[in-house]
Amino acid sequence: MAGASGSGKTSFLNGLSYPFNDSEYLQIGVSFKLVDCLINNEDSCLLQIWDLKVNSVLESLYPSFCQGAKGALLCFDITDRDSFNELNYWIQIIRNMAGYIPIILIGTKLDLNDQTVPNNEINEYVKKNQLNGIFFTTIEEKNHIDIFKHLLESIKFPHIYRLSIPLTEYDYDFENFLELFSECPLCNKKNHFKELKEFYFSKNPDMMRLKENLLRLVKRTKNFSNRYNMRVGIPRYKMSVGIPCCSCIKLISDVSN
Image (cartoon, rainbow, N blue to C red; front, side):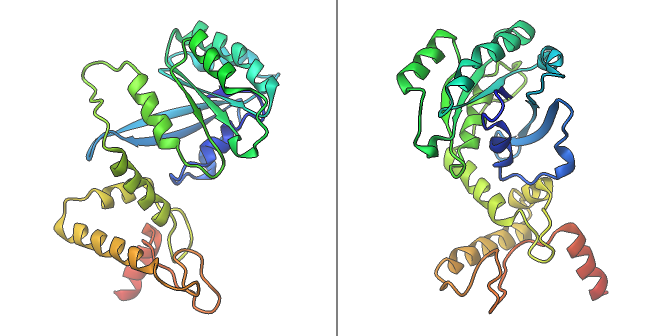
């Protein structure tokens, strides 16, 4: 993942609803993020995202960071002409070191309503440089899953990989589930993605029944008045619905015993 300083790369990654620990985000010229993308109901593809940091001291390392890459996300700020002009620099580095891998362009800060790079120029740039599409994002809009799905579809995997992409609405069901239950309702710490995924797709009858009841309860709470709240406790009532984290479950178990 590359782009000019202030082009929105970090905001894009931090906007993912997947739970990450701060310790996973290192500032050493390149930052790393692991993104678990569902391919179908039981398989997933783990993407390792390298976010190249704009630093004149470390710019000689950019080519080596791009070696072995299978695809690229290239960000620019649509309100900043300079960030658009800098795209050529990043494309040259990527293609010199990784060949003609898929490159997807991401125009950020669409919500600012101050676009200085017109759409026709952007579309012409994508066509001229043989890029694999353009997406526009805002801080509020969460279309990350569409971008990563498009990236997966664009990458030429060996035939042993399965590239069957699930139905969009199914993806969004799981995405919404993660957003609702990524935090423990007791200690407010992040739940582990792996455990949430195993719970959501479990074939165990008891787990499936528990998930159905939990989602039914969530749906019913939408009809509650403002004095109730799903994740943010209102001082008067302090009502919270969620899935306890591993530590809290262990604590509850120890107290019960």
